[in-house]
Amino acid sequence: MLEIKDLVVSYGKIKAVKGISVTVEQGQVVCLIGTNGAGKTTTLRTISGLLRPESGSILFEGERIDRAPAHKIVTMGVAHSPEGRRIFPRMSVEENLLLGGYSRRDSELKDDLEAAFELFPILRERRAQPAGTFSGGEQQMLAMGRAMMSRPRLLLLDEPSMGLSPLMMQRIMQTVRTLRAQGTTILLVEQNAQAALKLADHGYVLEVGSIVLEGPGRDLLASDEVRKAYLGEE
Image 1 (tube, rainbow, N blue to C red):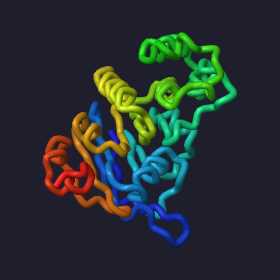
Image 2 (tube, one colour; image 1 turned 180 degrees about the vertical axis):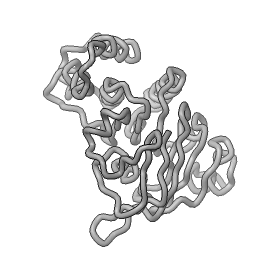
Image 3 (tube, rainbow, N blue to C red; image 1 turned 90 degrees about the vertical axis):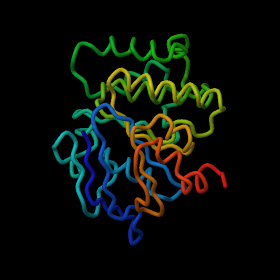
């Protein structure tokens, strides 16, 4: 579904991503793990059209998207739930969700609004509440629900558990499993390496812009190198 080849992304003279190649098959959860500054968020922002690569290519379902504008990438079936949630705090929960489907012209938007409420019942209960009054975990649910409103085939999730309690983190990860079971392909950036690798079909370890390890999620979870560097184990 997604193929990244030799991707290079720079901020001025600083190369944030240094020639990485990543493949995401349809129906998979693929995760990117690594320390801060490894290039994970930059990679997602480039896929979704918010950044332009210096070189390399990004293909979505066989079509190059690395020069396409962000709004077109959304209509092609790629949605991005960004780091830090980025909700609109003064707007209601329902207004935030409907903005996620702004590019759609079909008659099924209300059906997908109901689907978001089914996925996160608390959003239905507080649909008229200003989104800025939500807790961090509730805002994350809203951000994920908003991303799903464009009916994506590929969902980019950037640090969905950041700043959340262990219980809320478990709920978010269970939602990732639910979305996969419903047929959504997911590329996940996650600070909690153990939680990400447990549910990932495949994983990539990034260090300062380069991929240093890759493999099935469970294999990486069992790797001594990964356990020492990212799970705090000797």
